[in-house]
Image 1 (cartoon, rainbow, N blue to C red):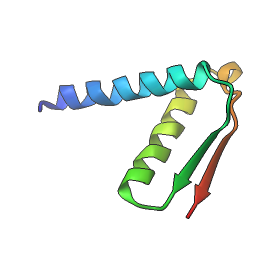
Image 2 (cartoon, rainbow, N blue to C red):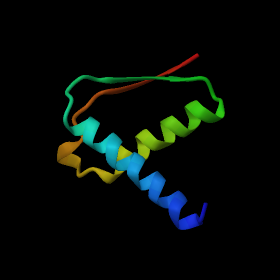
Image 3 (cartoon, helix red, strand yellow):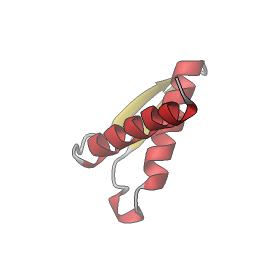
Image 4 (cartoon, rainbow, N blue to C red):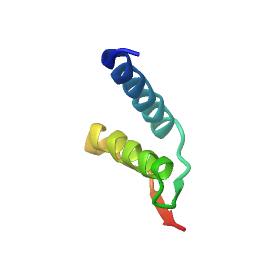
Length: 66
């Protein structure tokens, strides 16, 4: 897989998460264990929120460590 394709996959995931964030008013509850999968998920959530304009950042997000 070319590096451009990897970035495309990353951007597609960010786009999908942004759509869900904006079109659903339920809070997000994210389990974080410190492993690679949960670390990636938390990083993606932070990236999604940081890319949104401030007026669209209205969802509560809870990160629960386990």
